[in-house]
Length: 370
Ligand code: SF4
Image (tube, rainbow, N blue to C red):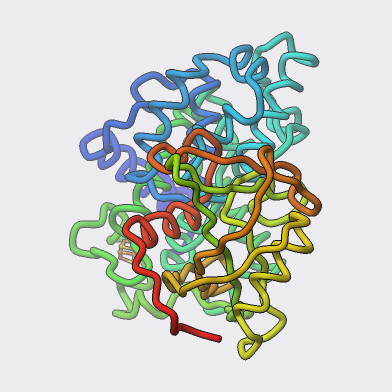
């Protein structure tokens, strides 16, 4: 596409027509109050719409406005985020709600610069809130939009470099519809999500097809090009399941400033290398992190979990030993016996949900990794 004024206007109109006819009805679109748009944009960072929908409904039902969110205890906010992943988003959102109450009288600011001063709000999210909730002419550029733009102009340079990012921002701004930036930005996002997908772009059903160089060249999958390659690191860990006859299990709360901070889990630790002795590591983890001397019984399960740049293999063992009530803690900031049938009484990560599902009907085996 040569981004001449005529081409930009024609493409803009085609996008608008397609969006108004085909857009998905989503709760934050039907009622785009600044607070709801803000919550949706934070939840949609790194998470698919289908996953976000039930979380969004529960979250805004529990915290219907900024003041309610600001006044809530952090544990309640994290509990409603439990399973959605990237928990720092929830903690930042909570902190930002308190800033909005303290500094803006509880009203979400309109201006992208003011929005960007809030915790967890970067340039993309600020532009999205400002345009969708307030109709301000702020262009958006996220992974989806960047892919669409790279294909429209058949960008041969790597998009994850500063000069191309600058050019993509300039193109996004030139293409923005000043009369209806809210619909335009959502049309670009929707096009990237529904039509111009990473691996199976539907060029035949695409409203931008007449202007798209990647389609004209017959090689949409060649774009966008990336300079850096993400290295996924394999990591290994262990944890121990301690249970009592009253149907409770021992969970411990991770410190705030680490990965999955503030969430509760079966006590355990990462291994220094793949060949470390698992059972010894379980004993050491209970000793170092809770001050408890436990004996390790059978191997219960092996759980695989992928984080952004880490592939975790977690071995779960049954443990027994004298555990005081309330349990002691050292590295963990809290520990408690929690009803095994309702572990969500405390906020859990997706990983811990997976572990609990894997040990739901534990069949301890004396073997397993050593
Ligand atoms: S024509 Fe194909 S490659 Fe181009 S924007 Fe549309 S879906 Fe993407």
